[in-house]
Image (cartoon, rainbow over all chains, first blue to last red; front, side, top):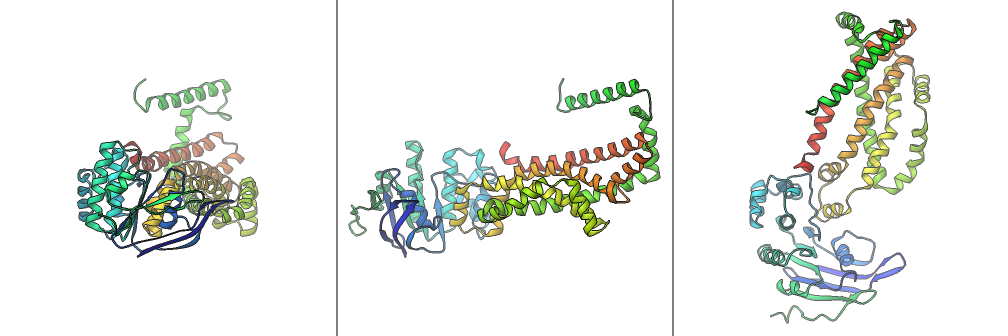
Length: 206
Length: 249
């Protein structure tokens, strides 16, 4: 169970987040929607434990994974090392299998800089799912990709979520992405930002 | 001109010609001997074993001081670049040591510790640590915050983080510090030997300075320069190429 209960977050004098509380059940996908600059990434960094300066509490499991807007790889280590260094208990065979699953099985011994941006993002996805996370956090992972690539990445993510089954928190400004992942949608609104009345609850989901 | 080595070779040859011309104009081998006039003394020193003995003594001191200065400097630089509080406490010390003349440190080390090997190596190390620290601190300040966040969420162990996330980002700074470090360290080692040791290139230069033997001073100085160039080409440059592999791939 993941329980987020943020009372406020300030940057200096200005308050960016108001009271925000929600839970994510095991295997559930939650999307936080909102226009850019509203504080989505701030909320995500608090939930991920990257930002610890806020009022409130966050309950999160041990095994977590994150996918950023940028691939955020180790450019000085090979593609396969980007998996095995982050997940020390992952065998080389399992790592190769994971690379094959995201469609870059033949790139294991290259450096990330030798991959296209689309392939680097696939590697970032592979890294996220390779650790069998209980909780997956994604920060606009399909932004700045062309429509076709974004669609294949979205399908790939959907498959991986189905196979691995983590609780997923997903931040985006594109409603269609959230719907494609059949996520429960929460909307971030106002200043300081709080959650708007949610449009689709878990029970109403078709 | 073609090939990578041809321009440096031509440039060095030019220096040799300049030396020959200067020696011819001086016309006094007591002041400046011709380059080829050094061959005899060089072979004599080599055969007697003196040259190798003193080269070895200096090289050992350089290695010790280099290893200590790089080790301490990297650790301090990493801490100061990462933690602002430590930086604020240690920065004034750094400024003091950066501005302390090498000679003062050497003399004080000899006075306080004694005329021995420990004092010599500590004096050289203390002279170099502040420079290494300053360079590495710049590198540590420029760490990518996104990689930090990634390492944190995935709970990467401290050792893996240091070895595979932080040090690769520092590599260009470590190379720069090592480059500059080696050049400065061997010069300071010579001063230390000149002032208070009874072996090493600096000691031999002191000896032949008192005998006013320019040829022998040049033989010892040039031999050590050759050794340092060999270190640069056989260790530093290949290492640099290795850590830069991912950039050019």
